[in-house]
Length: 373
Ligand SMILES: *Cc1c(COP(=O)(O)O)cnc(C)c1O
Image (cartoon, rainbow, N blue to C red; front, top):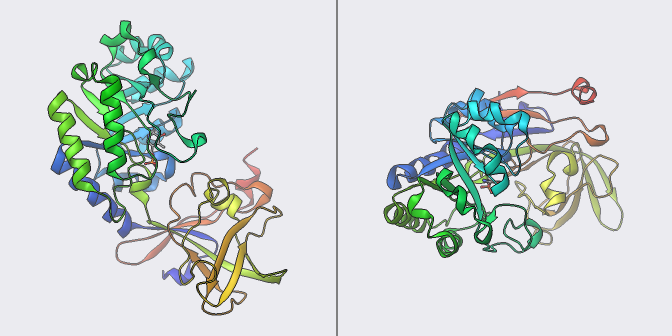
């Protein structure tokens, strides 16, 4: 069907853009010999896994559920790195995963034997104390962080069990940040690197974004692999679905209270929580930032929540009830975080295939809301 025939609200995944992103990553693997894993938390939409798997080495999971999904639908290397594992999950994880990374010396000591007995490669998540972000609240290396083991706490007595080190400290960053991160890793953990089989440099690499310094990433990767004779892994999530999704909405009411307000048939809080949680401001097709075009609107959701605001935008024409508004770059953290709080229905999910044809993959109804209990 045509895009105009899709229901509203609807998440639309763009297969051509997904493939373009994946091709960049596939070329990087080929050119450098590094391995690239798909970090699922931004987009755990398993109907796309077999396609993504054709371009990458495997998956990165941060929970047993994600590892199970990857095991069922991805069929690549299955890596898991969770802040703490529960005894009940450990045996199954050891059976379905190839690499298990522990966050602390205690967790490593408790479960490494079981992991090794199942043939898993054991890793330790490290904290190189390299701050890369604006706000400590979101930085895994902030003071007193619970994520990763610092050099001071490195479990020397267990070092022989550790086959790889894992570090995740970047967020939407370019390769200059990667260079600084790697310098911090070498400064703090350089003595351990020669005995490692792999080094996982986590996610947060905005590799598929225009202007990303691919040559710099390749140079860092090659330097590490040659100096320490190990395999470098990256596990981007966002970079894989960067700009590969749209959110189709419709104007259902117009109100004036100090400024023109347009109510959409969707909810920012429920359907695109990064807008309210992380102050994300998605681009909107045919609109611009406030005060650029002549008609100003604040776009709001139809839930009862005061904070349910998509944002302020300007348009070249007055909005009409029934008009469709399509947000761009809405594949990341939308489906995975969507909720039905206040009884908001879940949007449908559709794909635009590479030939331009659109297809509905899933729709939801009242039973999905009721069955959450
Ligand atoms: C979130 C996360 C990733 C993926 O990060 P992106 O910003 O989506 O690239 C990779 N590894 C770990 C450990 C993570 O927590």
